[in-house]
View 1 (tube, rainbow, N blue to C red):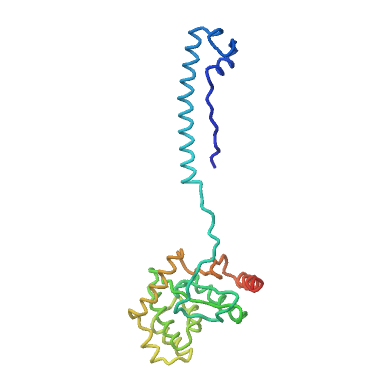
View 2 (view 1 turned 135 degrees about the horizontal axis):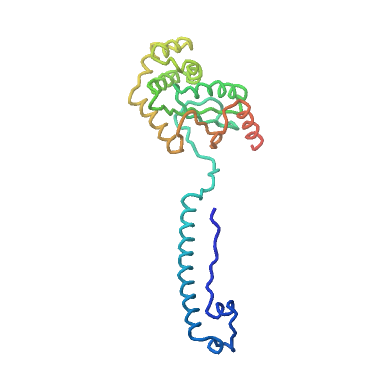
Length: 249
């Protein structure tokens, strides 16, 4: 952004040479009057002052460049994201692992849900889904919906509940969760006991959210593909990642 300037200092002899004044040997005195020598020394002193100002400006320019113009190189290293006790779909040795930080009341997460469902069904042996909760504070049903999904997970139907609930993101509530549980053939009485937002469930949500914050997650949905931040949300994009991951095995 800022080019480096090279400053030099001209000696009295050089100034005199530029001025066209003759020299006798190494001495200036034979060709220079005292008055002229004094003037050249004055010019040299002024030059020192100008150089000091220019160097100061260069230092300031370097400082501004470091603050405003410098950007650290992009972090291209894959992030380690522990699965922990999160619900998953797909084999542990899948070529592509997609870790989703999501909020069940988020409309964009609802749009992404069928894409992730379809990619995992299209490549059942090559894709593993990992779900991480990232409930946003301005979504009043986010935590309750997450608790309901966890309750469905206790009966082996986490992803079924998660994907079914996606199309109902705008009408979440206890009556909906119970209806979905019945639709999925769950033990509804057990589901109703488990869907409560207990301190233990809060701990799960808080742990997932803290992990997301540590990774730099700022919103939902955020997906990591084999540790790298996904750049698109289309089926074709994820299918391409599957092919790339398989070719790298």
